[in-house]
Amino acid sequence: MWTKKAPGDIDAYLAALGPDKRAALQKLRRTIRAAAPEAEECISYRMPAFRLNGLLVAYAGFTNHCSLFPCGSTKPFAKDLARYQTSKGTIRFDPKKPLPVTLVRKIVKARVAENAARKKRRT
Image (cartoon, rainbow, N blue to C red; front, side, top):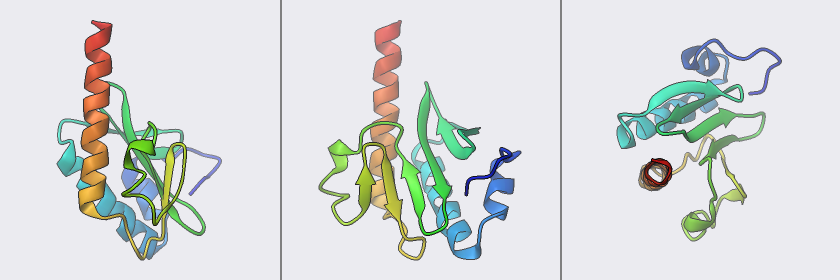
């Protein structure tokens, strides 16, 4: 859901969505939090996001779909994502058919590892 004004916090962002999108994104939020409990929630680019050693993932609700933004390439998950509409850094899904929890965990854990490796190279 894109608005001219950035949401104050994630709960406000989710509250502004319709019930189906809100439910799908709340489930996604819980799954991400469980996969990366040390990650910090934030608003980035007007969307709810998680960061740990940099941006991990973001998610959003739009008029006709919801999206997960892995903040990296979707190519490593191409086989798992074959049934979803994807682009370089976006996974779109119908809120009535949310992304599988196991797939979200896999993506988040991969992003945690990528960010940790990048941090290690910098130090």
